[in-house]
Length: 158
Image (cartoon, rainbow, N blue to C red; front, side, top):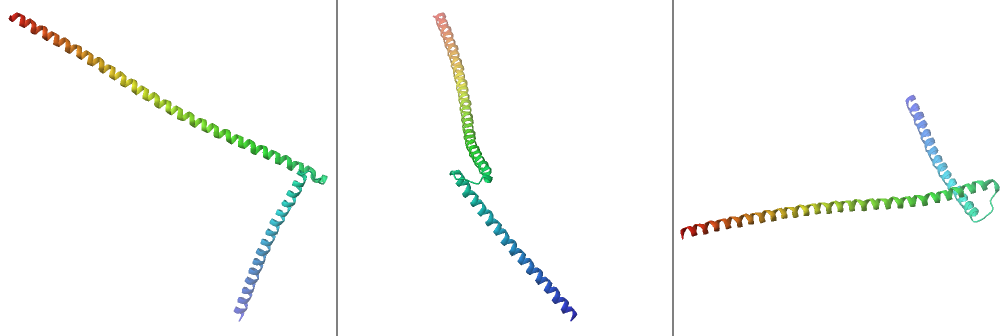
């Protein structure tokens, strides 16, 4: 029986620890939810009084410095966001300009290549024309020489 008594004691200890752990988890969750709720409520109160201050309401002197500091921070935030928007616009403009410059440079290079090809083609055609003209002259001269030789031979025969 001593074995069963020890087993019962161990089971009871485990049950107590489990119950304690579950109760601690429940209370921790309850405390966490209460803290979150409290912080939200305090934030709402602060927002209410800040809006009241901005609308020209009178606030306690001991919180006035904090209200003014909050207003300065809000103004600084608005200025920073406006500057960030302007900077973003400038960045986008520079990107667009750089892209346009790259496109123009590619088009210019393409036009230069096409002009070089056209010039090379014209040069080849001109060289061919000169060669054809030279060949024509040579052929004419050869024909004239042949005609002269035939005429001389015909003259000798007669």
